[in-house]
Image 1 (cartoon, helix red, strand yellow):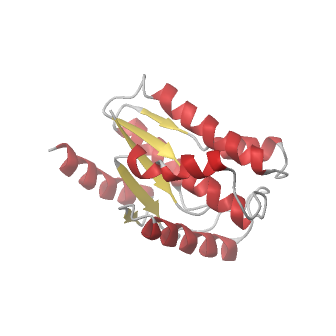
Image 2 (image 1 turned 90 degrees about the vertical axis):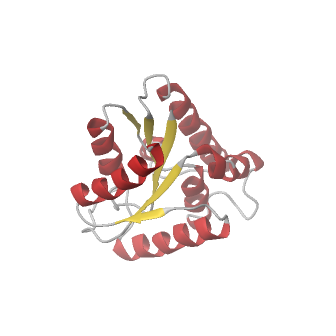
Length: 175
């Protein structure tokens, strides 16, 4: 079993793509746990909440591995959690050590990292910022992956086009 993670800014299709591929590969997807906690706390999060998000997300991944078949598709990871905590100014100047550890472990945790491009229409939601914010976060995600030397593949286009791009990478890795 290998973990495949989808990262990118909000409204870039991570959830849709991970669920689509889980159905296509007859396996499971792990949703973005941070979204549930964010909504529950109406966006008022502190440093400990970001640690909780990272740890609960990892636990959900670990639990889902028992049901996964070859691939586990994961919507977001601790890198994005850390990045958003910093950008929302909710983790402080020195993020908690446990959050940093979870983010650092992302390099080895996932067999493949895919960045969902921000080339699809922005979907407005009460818990989202705006399209300008999306573009800013998207650039920060790419910069962070590069700084951490985490290899990634950017996927673009419709859900079907993105799925084909992911399939090419995964099928080549499985060969």
